Image (tube, rainbow, N blue to C red; front, side, top):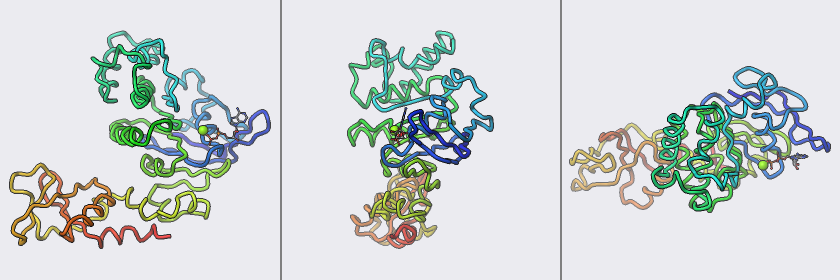
Length: 334
Ligand SMILES: Nc1ncnc2c1ncn2[C@@H]1O[C@H](COP(=O)(O)OP(=O)(O)O)[C@@H](O)[C@H]1O
Ligand SMILES: [Mg+2]
């Protein structure tokens, strides 16, 4: 857990980067700091591993003021991923990932196993990539190595400062998706900085929206979309709030329990099709509970069936129509 309590940071030249910032990042969750350039996001992040110290107020890690931790220890227990990650080009991918475990004096076998495990996790098969050099990789692959390196010693806290900011949109999306999957398996507390509200809504369990030097709203993506606290937040989200809400809403959160008219596909089902009764027994593609409301809507629009089945583990567990989707979106109407 990370807690900011009335934290102010003024740099030596007089610039007040953040003023009286308070928020708590719960253990094992991802908090995204989002806001325009120069509003203090990177400064906030640097206070967590003591690359900077506050001028006023206190930052706590698990209830202990971080001024009581040794900065070197603290940094070894904190993964840090930055844009254009500073990989060591003269070292192999494997040695890059092994950096912190080596500093922590792990034995060689443990390091090798950990490196392979992480490269595997980041979709970089070790047999192929371990001995390559960063210069041989694409931007997306380099960024994956950066994430693997930051996770190598299994840190309690992972700081990610615009980690995917330099990537093309398609690579960025796929890294976001992969990271979301990994994030579910990690118990790491993550602080993620971006200037993109879309990325924030996608990645964050909670989002801290920054205006110059202050946090103006700290809430879940759903609450930020339903109840923006100020005109600044409304403007920052943009006029397509209902669409953004559809992206953060899952089918399982809006579906009706009615399953009448549908049975799971007779073939035992791969979990993705269902049979429509009384319609000549035709087959429709089913939704999965974790699909977004946006993809449900898109499939409803494209389908001549007004209601689509939701299938989980080969069973029809509910259905979704335009009606449920509209109702879930009421809060997000500007
Ligand atoms: N080392 C520094 N010395 C003086 N001012 C700084 C320093 N680092 C950042 N700043 C200033 O602090 C403010 C916040 O910067 P930063 O935290 O990097 O914002 P963000 O990451 O949101 O773009 C900006 O006005 C920036 O110019
Ligand atoms: Mg920054």
